[in-house]
Amino acid sequence: MDKEEFKFPDEKETEVKVNASDETEVEIALSAMMAQAAAQVNAQAAQQAAMMQAQQQMQDPVVQMQQAELQLRAQELALKEKQLAVDATAKADRQALEEERVKGDLQLRAMKVASDIERDKAKMQADNERDGVKLGVEIAKARAEDARQQKERNIR
Image (cartoon, rainbow, N blue to C red):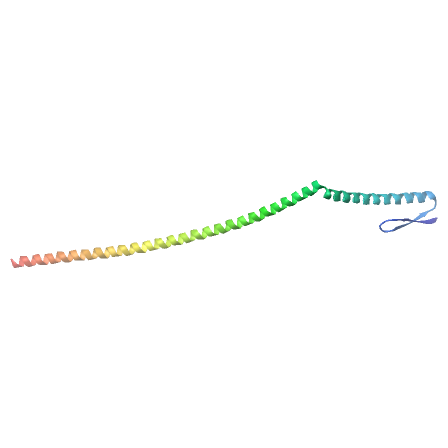
């Protein structure tokens, strides 16, 4: 059995040792290695072709316009999102302000009602006192009249 060495140029140099006793075995081994190398070359070529196609598409004015349009739409969406956030904050602020206004109005009304109650109480008390004084004056007048009439009866 003779040993023969085969080397394939590659990104990394590959060294393959084949134990072959005749030319047929060498040819079979060589064919297998060449098939493997061809598959690698095809894969690299396909990858390069895809990269070139992507680069060409990026240079295509239509693709560039589409990319610009997509960027513009993304910016518009971001702007809308920010505007919605601002609007939500403003709405929350307005709602908080309205709640404070309503609270203040309720407190003011409660103070007015309490004031009205106190005023009404004071008026009622003043009216009662005035009515009491009037009654006292009438009673005093009636007693004075009774006393005068009694004196007149006693004098006659």
